[in-house]
Length: 129
Image (cartoon, rainbow, N blue to C red):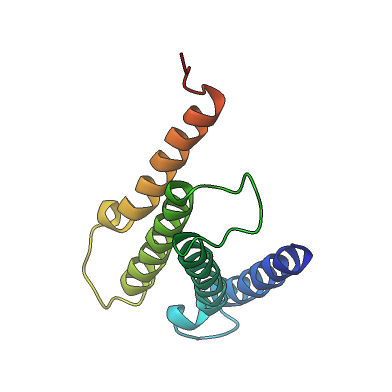
């Protein structure tokens, strides 16, 4: 767990440093290169989630009370939607695609709406009678 937290901070720091350098005009790198730390970290998350989901499907679950498969599938979908947002944003910033900004933000809005629903489900648990 500590390694994941450390990796999160390292990748966020590298991304923010490269983003500031690009926005300040110090480097003329491609936007896809600027977002590389985000994609590497998200790739690690997707790999970890896929391995945990595959282990859960095979019946191997070393911890009792771990998140169910539905919740892990939501996490995987959220990371993939975030990746889609980053890809479309980079394509728009590099002028590779002429896409309206509302379509670029659609995956991000979907993740935020899903997170809001998940939060509501956790705050107001279903009554079992």
